[in-house]
Amino acid sequence: MAAFATRSAPFLGLAAVLCVLAGAQQLSPSFYSRSCPNLASIVRSEMTSALQRERRMGASILRLFFHDCFVNGCDGSILLDDTSTFTGEKNAGPNANSARGFEVIDAIKTRVEAACRATVSCADILALAARDGVNLLGGPTWSVPLGRKDSRTASQSAANANLPGPGSSLATLITMFGNKNLSPRDMTALSGAHTIGRSQCQFFRNRIYNERNINASFAALRQRTCPRSGGDSNLAPLDVQTADGFDNAYYRNLVGQRGLLHSDQELFNGGSQDALVRQYSNSPSQFSADFVTAMLKMGGLLPSSGTQTEVRLNCRKPN
Image 1 (cartoon, one colour):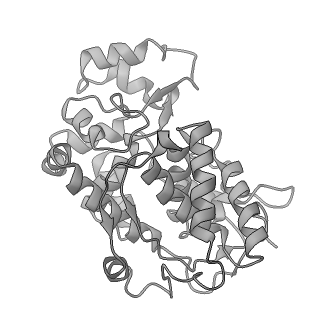
Image 2 (cartoon, rainbow, N blue to C red; image 1 turned 135 degrees about the horizontal axis):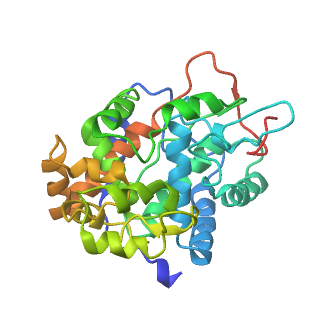
Image 3 (cartoon, one colour; image 1 turned 90 degrees about the horizontal axis):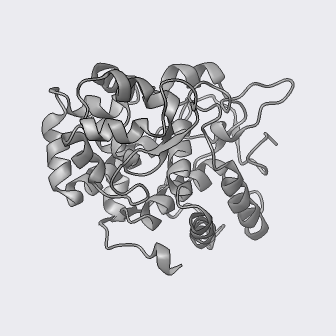
């Protein structure tokens, strides 16, 4: 536990949370205060154990939350397994052989069900787990509005269409986040999630061999474990400085042309986000505050009205 003691970090109070999510459908940080009072401590305990086993898991869970919310809202759809009669989101291009951490959500759900049967949605568990992963790796904490429901279906085509890829241009990133009512500032702050986690060689090979806006020594370092051919799944840290620490080093990397993915370096390449990237690179507190604001906005993305929802008993399948 000591290894995961949190650094002092900004905390957004309930008023700010509710302000950000005014108009969201009945989401509240106190949603389970009576029906499942130990929910937060259960999630925190399981995430602490998961990160003690593998620090990378904090990034994996955060990515699951992003990929859930960007596809028809934060509804736990990414957690549904494919079956012989159902094709979900797990094998969509952005998720196949890369989305991970499902077993951690399963473990949390098992403990939550034992404490509060048929009460807490998988979507809410994922939202809490993502927050705790960030905080346990040294990032900020915030009150998570709760009360989401789980969808009974998922959409592979929507996952393929709505999730920005590692080769995206700045214009594409701004448009795709804008489609979710997230501003360019939100997009640049949320991209800071790449201060933790890993990426596969196949997603940054072209950048380290063919692009010009890259630090030469950084490119050479990454080429050691990412050959021109083969080794597609070889991993490299998204943040070369503090791979498993949630901080603002990602933005310092971008200023130094050490962004791993093309889409990362696009944020600092003579475009509209350069000034904000410089600001975040110099101000950890500003990055943390904007990251929390953007996470709350993204976490408020909900399924469209009329979507069939429930509280799943098993996060991998509808009831």
